[in-house]
Length: 179
Image (cartoon, rainbow, N blue to C red):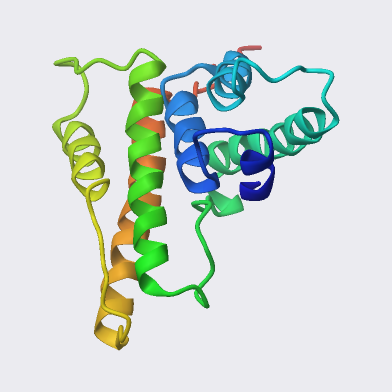
């Protein structure tokens, strides 16, 4: 995804782009999320007839459907789109910060506004994500302690997104069938 974003001249990279998508989905944009998301990612001067743009659109559509399935089914194991563990901690921290920045941006673009009906925990999670978006790490000799701390923050964000989704887009309970 990152390579395609670069090739179409997007201002976004994969982690931030995935965060934007998740934010849009959490505020209930549903089918409109994919369209809004693509409009944000693809520069205005790109022709939809361009082969690279078409390839990107297919890749983005697949990611959209995968992410939507993961967010709607807790057993599928929602995952943030971040570099793997072999990538140095500084780059992973930057990607996580970008992911959180994208998420809060996606919420805003999607129309999220603080509301007294929203649980305080949800509002605090969103504020925490905003703080995480400012994170950085530059020590090339990261040890086990730093890796563990990163994993805990990543897991906090992952679970937090699912809680935010549940709060902002609760699953509709089916009415019992009356005979």
